[in-house]
Image (cartoon, rainbow, N blue to C red; front, top):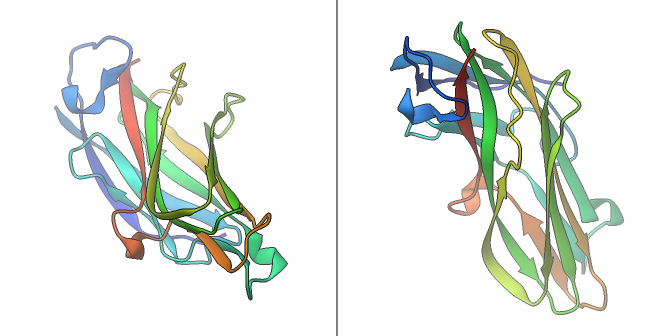
Length: 205
């Protein structure tokens, strides 16, 4: 479990009470900080996963630099499944609570005909039993960037005015099936417009 980069994600908060589920950009500026405090798994070696502000003060992005599964020609069996578990420390201003309203996952696939792949992400606030999970299936032939969305059916808020850890577990898996040649499934930022975006929802306590 390794520490990684720390960033400040400025969000909008106001002295007035706002209704449940207020978008992060609708509220005046105090800071929520997000920091990767732990990482493990075959898809995120130490130092290869980070968090950054998404640029419009409504959430944060997770970026991977060595997250790829592969199957088929020349690939080891162990490479068919890769996973990354992250602990993201979120510090919330007094008087406020925060939830993840939605998430957007982006990656790249090169799947031969007959091969299939799975992208699975689950996340939850540490100490909470409410887990949100997104499964997305892909089938070859497929070559290019992909994107999937996850909108929380029910908003699960962290504790008010405290530090909370958002646990994020992402898995990439490939089944070569009847395919020949090499198939890959990745979420590497170096391959283009590829990352995971988590969008905030704020509520006054």
